[in-house]
Length: 227
Image: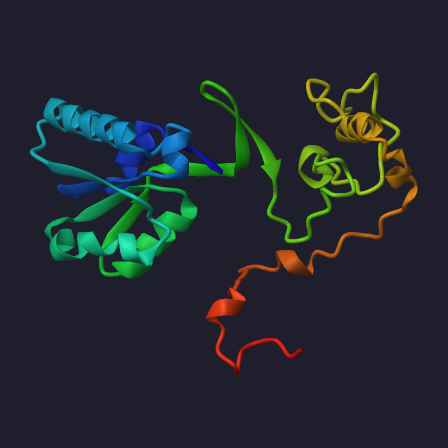
């Protein structure tokens, strides 16, 4: 899932400038799971903004709504009838959701309330860790399901490096060495022979930005890849 965290209130306030009519828009998927932009977080931010406005003597209108998703146009349409009532829209989605919201309502000021951090997994209550860089060339079948591109700061495809020390990473000794983890996982699987295969330099072309993906079922005959 996409993991994000909320910006400081002072930073959000600075973005607003003189806007008096605000709509805080939450997202009910990834950022709700990581407790950054779901319904409860929308309520908290809206309340903080109202309190700060009251203390400063400003009479702002601050409304709130949480959508199922902000990264799909169909879920943005319910905003259309009343979007013009507001001076600024505060999006509590990931960067993709903020951009799509701004694209759909390009005549409105759309501001990000979150910092998008990484693609990761839940480690425990309130704890998440990065596991994927979305590099477009997955090799987890060769590394026992452990990604060296993400977990190794050097992105080594053939490891470990000479700096690993007692299973720890030399870049950050608090982290385990990714290739030590890979070794032990492959050992459990009885597939240590995979370490003898030298991997070629990574092809970074799939990471060319901005990326696009079209499902074959939705391609027209003129755009489908030749057989």
